[in-house]
Length: 402
Picture (tube, rainbow, N blue to C red):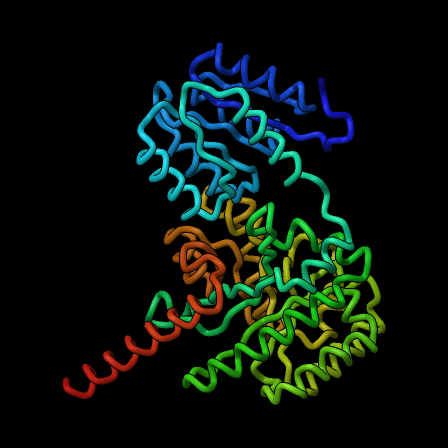
């Protein structure tokens, strides 16, 4: 009997045995799932793209390929589907496959061995339902109070340097270490936070965390800037902006070490107040970056009048620029636009050397993306800085000895 008060989850079951697919379908549908099945690898991509499942039950051994190929595809599209690995292989093989899932930043729900166990399968599906329940504002605030949130740092790379992976700054990205859901990305809760006002608490938490980390890095000999995402709600509210400035002032961090990123559409929602706030921030020494550029409908005149120092090109264009001429031309146009306005261009979503080389040829100043590094916890970001510093010292010593 279906559990009527459950949220509707979509399940994609991938197994070359139709009988197993039908068993999985029956169990899942009884719990209220919508279900699609694949018995061949070549069906997977089209089915996934059309169905957009919340959960993928994936057999590792399939005719014409293997589950690792499908895991790599899910990583490429940055899927947030929960993954259940399912196979008759030895446990150590399943565990190795689970590490591949996790290393790609995907969400592993469970590993299961064949033959199928209906009680275990139902339990896993019930867990998926709990994870899929919408986040509430109260749960969000409780998570902040319970220290479940953490700031990750994604490096920004200098494309015009002689060193292909020279870190020039970081972007701070909030993550939720949810007790049931695991690591939750900002995309899954920021919209709610914006709607309910919890974005104020989240932004203060991120600002305090970043200022604290910048202080630690300074003590370790690293002086580097970090970007914080600022919603239109914060930027257009003078009182909320002042809260953020007070946090920075109390931390005694140099304002020049901070970059505030706000989106193109957000800037245009309340242009008069936003312009006043951005100018005030600029006078403090904070750099300003306009994020996700190209996805909204900015007036170029307004962009020209606002004191941005950087234009970030949305990853939707960057990801496709090697295979799509229109995307390529949009990226090139936006880089040229930024230069014409006297500001730097930063490309988001760089995942291959080919795209990096294209951007370099276009004169793009900087880039972010999995080709260089995924967002990492502060401890790993520190190790990146240490390795870069060691390499610089080695090259300097080599140059002097030569």
